[in-house]
Image 1 (cartoon, one colour):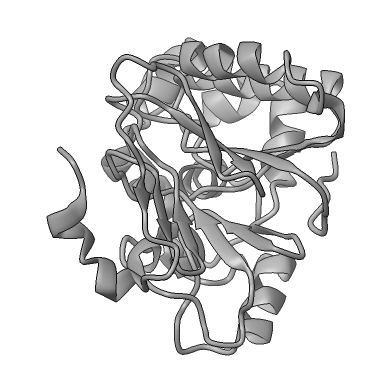
Image 2 (cartoon, helix red, strand yellow):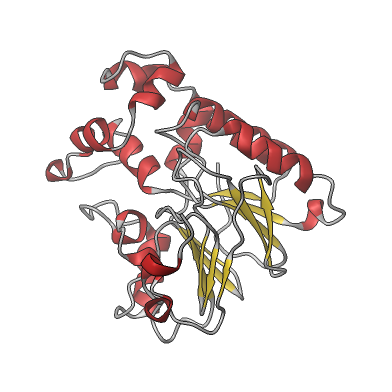
Length: 269
């Protein structure tokens, strides 16, 4: 299975899923009714697995969407990285210890349960993992580039050259112990490097409402546990919510940098 990493045209980008299949379906029902559905890219920003009610079902649903709508991309989040590393689906230095991390810090109990495997039995899960799940997980891109947007699970380093970051992301350097672009809780709240002209779109860090800032867009509005899932239509900057009755109005400050926003004081809780 291969995913595109260079795209153009309209996009619908989903925040972190974490097994919340019902919320994805609710958004998809409305997305499919749009006249532009067939020409619009669908992007999942990462973290299909762990924490939520049905991680296996989330992967099954992603595969169904890919079969129905070929212009679909699933990015790797830190949870997919930890899962594939723990299951030995890519070569990694022994000091990275993805097995220990995934079992201890990622809410992976939900993933084992959804596959019907006792928690911690990594060898059994690897053996029982459906081949199409294995193929998808092994081939998730770390980033997707669009003329107007750059999609990455956590964010970009503000003081590292953009071209260098893109090279590492598109090559998927698995030797890195904990790649910040997928794992850092700091990067979602950082501005991109100055030479990056696109809006950087990411999830990873829970925000109760979608945040539109200068060259930044944050879309993980559930954290896998609560709230209304968000899907943002680009370039329209429209939001489709899974649960309209509890969705919060976005923060709209397209001229403000992330530091100027001071989100800890601005987000609605």
